[in-house]
Amino acid sequence: MSDLLELTGAQAAERVGAGELKASELFDAYRERAAAEELNAFLWLAESAPDPPPDAPLGGVPLAVKDLFCVEGVPSMAGSRILEGYRPPYTATAVEKLVAAGAPVLGKTNMDEFAMGSSNENSSYGPVRNPWDRNRVPGGSSGGSAAAVAAGLAPWAIGTDTGGSIRQPASLCGIVGLKPTYGAVSRYGMIAFASSLDQAGPLTRDVTDAALLFRHMVGRDPCDSTSLDFPGDIPLPSAERLEGLRFGVPPELTGEGVEPGVRAVLDDTLKLVEELGGAIEEIALPHSPHGIAAYYVLAPAEASANLARYDGVRYGPRRGDGDLLSLYEETRAEGFGPEVKRRIMLGTYALSSGYYEAYYGQAQRVRTKIADDFRAAFERVDLVITPTSPTVAFELGERTADPLAMYLSDYCTVPMPLAGIPAISIPGGLSEGLPVGIQLAGPAFSEPKILDAAYALERAIGFDGSGARA
Ligand code: GLN
Image 1 (cartoon, rainbow, N blue to C red):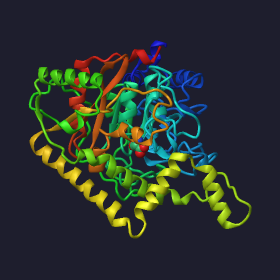
Image 2: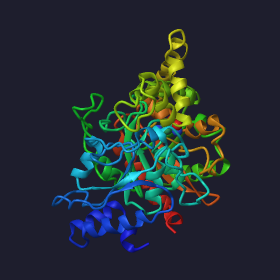
Image 3: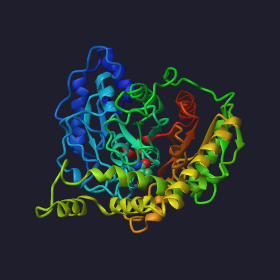
Image 4: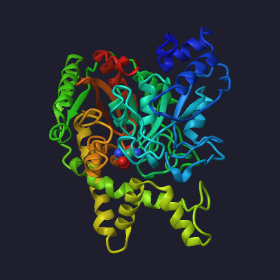
């Protein structure tokens, strides 16, 4: 790979700003590399990019965008056949903001259909391959974005996280992924999965890039009533030490089910935390083991309502033999893949009268308990540290026949979106030659603190990601 493509997003933006590099040259280099890729990471590529506005903070450095972000006039299908050929008449706020800051869209990245999955194998457009080992999954659902950044097909990318879909693929591909506080980034123009959980965030080569993209994504948007202004600035991270920071280790998310190789990387990271002056203590998150059960009631319940709009009338292909019922039935039967259908059935059942209290009501109560656990923990510690994924990247096909095994991929990442709090995944090291992600979570709007701690750790870890860019 040429030196140009080795630059992080921030480094490239700086060179463009200094007049040492032309933004169009950078775009063309990535465009060419992405067009030749063999990972199936991209579903669509831009032909060209507008010149960045003068002094644009993101310098014209191109951005890979998960397919579920609406981009005006550009295929935006959320990885689903039911939206094949759909070109929205407007652009998602998060994308619009990044483009305005000088990061033009390079392409749309492959993903699990409607962001439902942990391996990218649920995409209607074929699985994505992990650049570290092409027989393995890149994680999901933002697998295309993660694989593209890890393989050097894009300098940086955005994705969305509902139960882990930024952090888990970042972990499996050896890059950085930040899931922001719920509401920090507008959801307007994101094709919805589960609206009370979905959040957009960056997938990047390093922590500085994550901070830089995040800084230009945040803010209240009148088009999303759940969005808010970020309280305070988002500085670029600079911490070298961790003095004064207390890290909580929850046995519930670091013990049973975590692969020995993953646990070993966590242990090495905990040693580094102490060497850098941070304090470690055990904390309890007693309800977090129920996170997966609660999530798989709440997320499908919300999805079943959000996906009711795909009826063959408004978007995408239309099937049926002329009468209304067959239009609905055949469009949905053909357009949705098996995992999406499973979620619609689960969600519709959980919301049906007579079962509503037993499932949805109960899951909401568990959600509150999980949030309360974090609140109590953050009275004692600043950040919670866990592995991001209990395992390294698994083989293609290994978990497709067993939905429960697939769902457990998000065991460590699901509690945070249920509580609405931010979390980052950074590469901690390798196990069996494959990347292991370390997760740091903090209270709502603690992103600057999380980014700083992640930055100090990143420097101490010195992870080498070149194994994905061969
Ligand atoms: N893997 C989880 C799921 O299948 C989370 C997906 C996500 O965060 N979008 O729902």
